Image 1 (cartoon, helix red, strand yellow):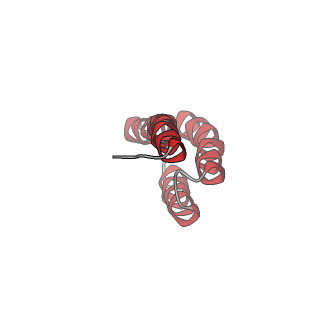
Image 2: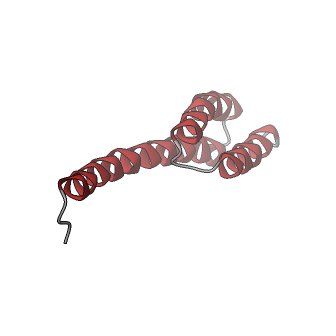
Image 3: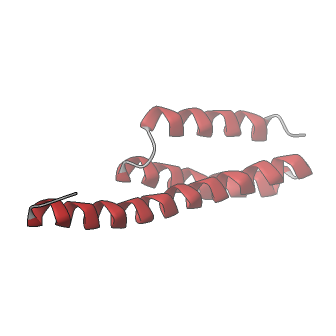
Length: 87
């Protein structure tokens, strides 16, 4: 158990940050799922629009440090390729 005031403060702060970061990751996943569902429906225009909305969300996650830069890049690349392959 934390004894010093600073350690107690860090525990509170870490809990708050975990909540906020979890919400950020969840939001990114929601945007990615929107792209995937548009791809599954076969609507290229909707998929492209969803991808355009998802890209800044992923970039924001990278800037905030909740996802790794290469992870975001990989996901965006794969989604872009799938959207481009739609008829």
